[in-house]
Image (cartoon, rainbow, N blue to C red):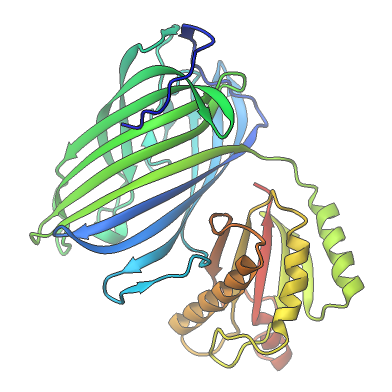
Length: 399
């Protein structure tokens, strides 16, 4: 259980409730660090970045309607098969994206269609409809929903119920500020039905301990810290165990004037006469497209001179430090689909690593994504079109 120094509380009682406001936009950034053991032997170590963009679109009788996009990305720190320790500058590689729509009432209870995979944890936290005394405990039902399609062939979101145990523990300090805080602990034990043709789990057990920091004025979470352990007892006799920690921050999103930002960046690029760079507004924010960025053929090694171009882009990105970025790679229509995807990811990763080495962002605020030839901007039947399609895009995100 994550228990730290208890500070003097400004009040012996606290009322916890969500205060939803239509138009609120925020993002949740969580980093999960875990070790994976197979039959009690360390197999690999990785970090998972979960980036969630949320907008409250409507509030009715205290229930907030939330529309959210969940992005998951991962970077492997250690893999026993290759025995390679990845450098610290390596960015997170995009894994999967989910859309979701749900309501949360003022006490924290969800209303959500069971077709949605995200969020994983639901009805945590939930609060009694009364004030809570210092050190008071309460219990409420919650559940997790998991996406086991790829791993175990379970097509529908898989529900794991549990009872969560809470305790109000008073004021706690986090990053120089003091917040009311409470602990959350829960465990589960479930036995999924087998799926023909798949090696799947016969039993899944989990143990989770959280410390949650609360903003009483805004009526929402500030952050949480967690330790966890999840064990899969597999049908082939193996035991797969995940042990780790998670930390999340809830950040209010500031409005982005996309047109103004794109104009500022375009004027700077034009003034410096950087060739083959375009700027445009996109749904996610503002995208800087480095068309025909030079790499050796079928390689993620940049040609001489390309780093100077990235140095200028890095200086521009440093002017907007509060915005996260996505670096995406694209190829022309040549070779195999698998080869194009690998190359686009590798080239986006090379650009990301260089930008991280220039302290443009910390690694947990940059996501690497490859599209192969899925999103051409020009005709692949011409040399000029193929040249433009071989590009890397850096998107400054609004939320």
